[in-house]
Length: 599
Image (cartoon, rainbow, N blue to C red; front, side):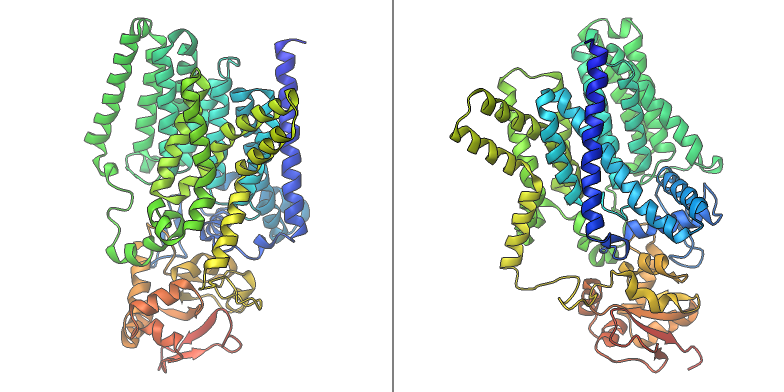
């Protein structure tokens, strides 16, 4: 059989395994009744993404990223990409046309889109493991990878946020680079995936930079084997960045620099980096010797640094450097995924085990390879794993990537012990192999951490009281009464913002988004101020309803911050005379009060 036939056969095998893993995950979710479709679990981004898609389908412009129903009058501009909205909207349009039901079409999209991304991520993980450690690593990669991805939650039904597609693209870019020496189009496609990662969200900038730097360094050290790879990667990266810039940025905004979203900043940097790398790899004098390649790439790096420093210095600041101190104290510091490893060590050691155990094991495995012939594959996988772990130490959200990248060396480790068990079968080898399997499955660590947390946590802080009550106000049913009321502006805490938009036709001030500064501050002023202050704000901004979630951690935080404030008074049962309880909501998860402006 030819090499091409072997390659086609391996692709079919990997696709089949990825499909099988996806069908199994779907079966598990279906058996549970797809609970995420009626309970977002507090994930505001998934809900607001659905709202954004609905708005686009209802006629909002492709280039218009305003969220008009959140913030002050007129809304604010979101920093998300239409590249994620488009395929979700396409699914909804297609299913709606076939069935005539928009609600059913949304449910199909909420299940199908994450499942498709899950399947692709498992597939590219299997391909990466095959390139890294041979055929024997594929099955462990699918089993360990699918389990890790399933329990991460970013591929669950309803997961419309962009983190899942970012992870899929990062794994695709890595997998294609690992295959690039054997497959000519792979490097070009890898660059395309890296460009799309950057276009979809700035959270992946460290991984995009790592992939690009790795390609450049491999070329610098081995021109013969890496020249065409570096050229094609650079062309793919620069080319797709140009296409995305034209396709998703309005011409009137081409001159606007945005540090938190794809804009002229990212386009200029990507264009210079990609075309520069391709030019150095293509021009013979620039890449003739290793010294010239290193010098040429060093000059390219200096040029990129100068462009950023001179043209876009504002983007060198910390992501939330200009955030209002009150929002940092009362919002940012309490976002779970924004916490650092060191804060978790002090406050939630069990979560540290769940998030960092398998990446640490994988890092140790990679370190052990240093003395046994370091390979091209080790450089690519090791660089991404190290960077992802560093990012996760800064913010725990980075562990999503480090857990996924860790699957590749872990699969190689399992494959090694499987081979040993086949060659020299014994009880001891079998037990060691079983232990290697167990410690490589992130779900095992997650389960152990959860059990430990429950055993030693006296607070018993959960989303319900054990009697089915939606204490944290996360279920669709908790907003049914609100959805039946005529549209108006609702004063609510930030974590109710996205659910209110998704489950009703109302608008809100607050929502957990860093661009919605004015709306969030206005809500804080109302909730933390006196009853008189709140009434003035509600009157000035024509607020018709106040929504209260007494069991929410955010409500309790604000009440503690201002015990004499408007929100604290509501939570203690002190209702001002200008508020009227909405019938049937007293004692419910979401309590509603109608504003009587004439009082």
